[in-house]
Amino acid sequence: MHVAQINVLPVPAHIRPTDIFEQWPSLADVAEAVASAGTRVSVIQAATCDERISRNGIDYHFTRVHPRDGASRRGRHYAGVLEAIKADVLHVHSLGAGEDAFAVSRCLPQLPIILQDHADRVPRWWRRPQCRRWYRAASGVAFSAPELAQPFLASGLLGASTRLFAIPESSSRFTQGSRARAWAETGLYGDPCVVWVGHLSPGKDPLTVLEGVAQAALQLPNLQLWCAFGSAPLLAEVQQRIERDPRLAGRVHLVGKVPHARVESMMRAADLFVSGSLAESCGYALLEAMACGVTPVVTNIPAFRALTGGGFIGKLWPRGQPARLAEALIDAAANRPSPERVRAYFDATLSFAAVGRQWADAYAQVLDERPRRAR
Image 1: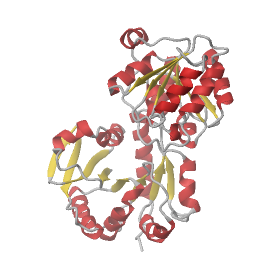
Image 2: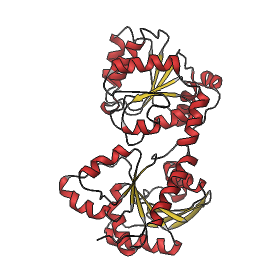
Image 3: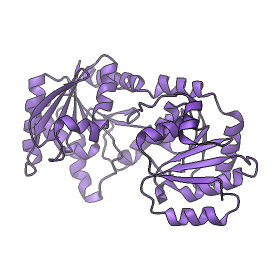
Image 4: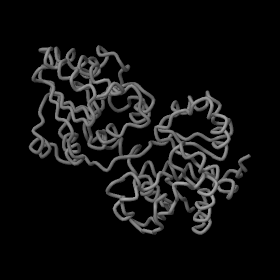
């Protein structure tokens, strides 16, 4: 079986195809995951020039797409590449690429297509009839969690005959490593040592997390919270909250933006990973924490339920409820699984090899079905 994965977001003109893997590490992630399961994979990447690169056993076809090209022309162009490489299945990244997928299907109606959700939102009502038509070209659609498909089903965007797959959006290359070395490298400490990695933004709900930590500290006096973050629209509110609460002052450390390699070291040093996210399409920081063997204490949202096996590993708490977070932190501090057990769960269900096996099964299912012509 030969699978082609396609990314229709063009490579920026100032970046050479050979350099894009440094800028967009995710370009290779799912492709290499699938290849690890024994499936032949090629990647078609929209670009400003034509170039072919072979990397880790995968052929990357950088395909020139003009900004003024319409979907029909792009579809014919992609179809030509797909025919040339003799692809058996097409994996299209993002439901936002539905129009391009539909255009390809008009040229290659017998080619099974799977769309993969990447935090895509249900389109506005006036676009839904058009999107509904485009999505009919897909034999299947993959979400990180089954519940994330519900808004698309409720809006009538996905038909009853469309197969739905629950596959993590990606995985992580982080490893467990040496905790003693991580302590020395990062200076992190605490009992428990708790790490937050995420923006200080309303969607991540850091103020609820701070209140939960404050309440948990009454029973966990040595708890320390270390916060790495990028954008921080709530930074002033967070700083004020910490300064005004004696339960938090000296306990919460705002580390700020750190290199990705240091995030791995912070995870390796931690006992618990905490998140207050109100919604996620996947949860990359959670994946990274579990890859390092850290016990998660995260909100009970669909993506996090899927990644933790419904709380089989770690603790889930209702979003926006600090008292329930405090309970979860106290429970996790006393009863957390070993880092080795967390990592073993990650290897079995969330690693690139595990994700690759899930994709290989999905491809086989749509390939076995009778292809349908989009109307």
